[in-house]
Amino acid sequence: MNFKLNKETQFLSLGMMDYKEAWDYQEELFLKTIEIKTANRKIEEESHQITPNYLIFLEHPHVYTLGKSGSESNLLLDENGLKEKKATYYKINRGGDITYHGPGQIVGYPILDLDNFFTDIHKYLRLLEEAVILTLQDYGIESGRIKGLTGVWIDHEEGAENPRKICALGVKSSRWVTMHGFAFNVNTDLNYFKNIIPCGIDDKAVTSMEAELGEKQDMTVVSNKLKQNIADLFEMKLLEEL
Image: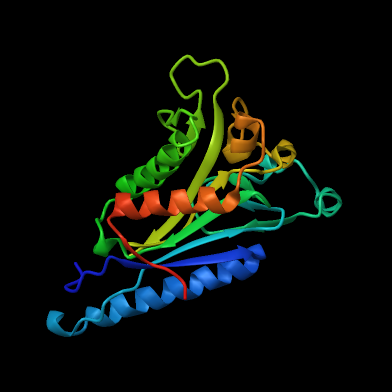
């Protein structure tokens, strides 16, 4: 474990950013953190350099992404269809299947050295889900988990007639450093999900806060609640942007 633990986490709100640009930025931060950990292995603990943590929030233009365990057959558009929808498509190195990102969605990319917090990927995913669940509670929306599936769901109880996903998760971890993260539908155009089999699940719907509450929500207010819930659950000290 890292001798010098660091729970300080730099929060970055990047606004609307092209998916590939954001992916490259994530990779840069991710690899720099791994480089520090690799260098630390070769020196005495007393000389270890602390590893940084980042929590990135942003939105993407319309884009479909396919994880390592996904099937291209879950994308229901060909190249011309993508152009018509003004959407892009990427195969990426996170876990999970296919998903959609677009305006009105809070995409969160925690780039954390879990050695600074806890070394348990299952716990990591459950805490990200819990942060969304707590945020939704503030709006009177009851949500939870469905056994065997990642993400956050409305009507999640066993036997419910219309379970629908409001937040998807897909992460990558190497040497306990994380990247990728979650996509939380706030004011998302749900029509874009009709062009895929979301996360490879063809018998459950997707939803958003706007769809559940009947009106658009203030993205900044929702983001602030969500980031604070993440900070509290992970016991982070958030460093705000200057």
